Image (cartoon, rainbow, N blue to C red; front, side, top):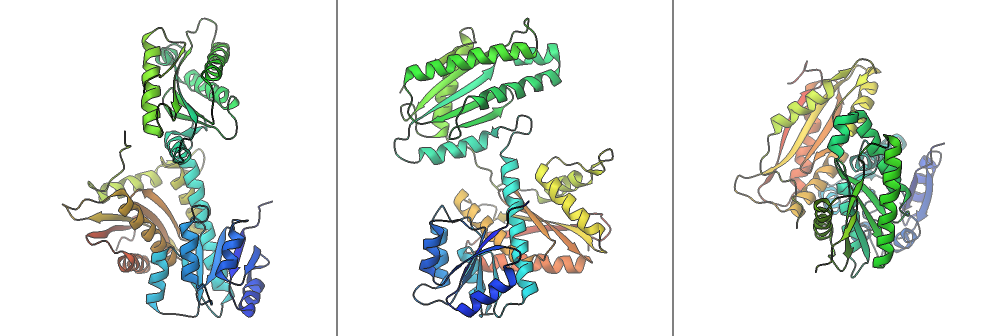
Length: 451
């Protein structure tokens, strides 16, 4: 049975709390707070899926409460919807700039209220699922490099955090693929991943960082002897189980490079570089062993400096129109996008509507340089502009670090264009960085009605 979503309703008027409760109690688990301070105290003990927040409250109004929610990393990602009697555009823009996802006007219209809440929770679920699937290696189901990098950096941001980073590489993997075949090679990778997962605790992280290369980050303080014993055990178990997977004649072994935090570094890039050098030493000295780096890097960020929106839209169209007839479903390269498209296609099949694809790109002037922080803030503003502009049934997903894809269910191109204009206009009002602007391409998914 699916767990009920949890909503926190914050309003200083008891009548408003009762009205909201009457509308939502059959579908959601509800909690109430009668002031901003009371809501912040509640959030120290529980993390709801959504917060409905009144703007006009004594002592601490909704804007101040939202500011405190967003300032706390533990609560910053919880979607917040304002409850308001104010219908002025200026108030709406202020709320969106601060991070609100939407506005619901009082007195509540039950159907509208439920529809907007359902839409936001659905988008949050999709985004969470996409975020998780985008950080998993599809073959082994281990975390990928991006996940372990982010997790390590969060952990290591605190002063003098102890940890051990291991890079593990399967020796002669190309020979294994050539001799036994790629299916056997994939099976070997999966087996190795299972071995590594069995040798870590829940607080540790294990990832596939590329090809036949894996990584483990052990959180906490370990002595040199403890890590040597741990590495030796990994070598012995891996050799035994991988040979059993293939045969005794298979030349399968593992090489391991190791670095320590904070002794060798206190961020992912530095620890990776040191462990990689230790791994290289092992590779150059007979393999099938481990080495500790004993001596006492920025990841390149995706940038919109060279954008080709038309090429991106062409790629999206190719992805969603490539059919897999055996499975009776659409097959696409981008796994999360596939699930969204299938969801939308099922919805369209039950109506007379069409699917329109909207690609929104944050762009800038030819000679303007944009920092990653500015870009990510602009993307958050774009996301909020999209959410408040969509109707129930529309779906959105992040396509890159500076692009969103929206799937609109509309009767005709003019209706889809109206939604597009609202998104762009809302973002333009929110955006405060001179020189940034939105490019967009809007097309019918079946190519029949492109304006």
